[in-house]
Every structure is written in C-alpha cells, then in structure tokens.
Image (cartoon, rainbow, N blue to C red; front, side, top):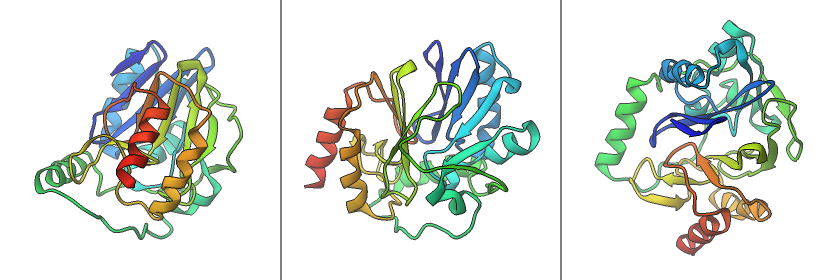
Length: 237
C-alpha cells in the first residue's frame, strides 16, 4: 500500500509493517508475519527497488508478529536486524511475553487468529543474530529513524520518528485497531507487559509532529500525535 513515494505499508489493518526508502536504499520497519514475505517482495518491487536494496530491518519490539520474516532477510540476504537491547532476547526467542489477553470479542479474535495462522504467525523463526541500540539515537540506515523509547508493551518497545517521510512508527506502543475487540481509533494495545508504564511512555511523543502515525495493528492515523495521545489517555481514565 503506497502512503507516499518513499513510504509503503506491507500487510493490512490486522498486522502491518512498513518500508522507508531514500537514495541509499530501503529500511524495513518491523517484519510482520513470516507469510507476509510475498507482500514484502511485491511492495519493494512497487517502489522500483529489489531485496538487494534493503539495508536494514529495525524492530519496534521483539514480539513474534513483528519479527516474522526478519530472520529470512538476515540469513538469506545479509540484512542486519536492529532491536532495542532490552528486547534482544525476546527477538531471539529467549522467553515469552507474560501479559494476559484482556478483553476480547469473538469475531475480531477469530479474524486475528485466522489471519495469523494463514500468514505463518504460529511458525515464527526467531532471530539468530541481532544488532542492538539503546534508545534516543538516530540510526545510520535509510530514512535515518530516530529511536524514541516507549517501554511498557515490552521492556524494549520503541517508536521510530522518520522526518523524511513525516511518519511515526509506533509498533504496539499504541494501536488504531484492537485485534481482540475490533475497537478502532487510537487505543492501548493488548498483550502489554506493563500497561501503566506504556501509558506513561506516551509522554515521550510530546515533541513529535508528523503526518502519519503508523501502528503494527490498525489503519494509518492522520489526526496528529497530540490527538491520538489525548484519546488514549481519555479512555484509560
């Protein structure tokens, strides 16, 4: 899905990841589900690029529905995979998240499970090797994403601010479609390790102004960061 000439979405409102391109190549932001590989190849091609142009995968966190095809890119194409140091073990499959599922509705839950099963979500290959960052820095990869620490959903959850495409990639720091209830609009993501910490981390987005908020689950949001945060805090209270 084309969002702008150098910005594309891979996947859909159930599970999504993203491509950012510049003159130096392509960065993949999150790696969705393993079965979205063909979608990745198609979207890279639609940008007039090939997999040989992919220079990095950067992960908002290490959960299975965000690392899907990352190891394939790393092992078959030599693409380095970057993740916050606190989520490195998670991305390597060392231990499982402990968060409960929380509220759910039958049809959205079944839709999520069906899509995940169809796209290899239950056959994820953990990363064998990762590169790590600490948070706060600008990564030397296409698009020059600035890392914003967003602990709560996981210890190493982050957002990436990419001014070149006026976008904020939030992973599961917030969602615009709750995969278990079907609720749409900015909200807190399920499967969050520390919900109160995740809510507090929204303050780290206060200085960000972008055209696009791009979550791992849900439609792109174009209503501004401040309004998204306001809605989440309002429902949380």
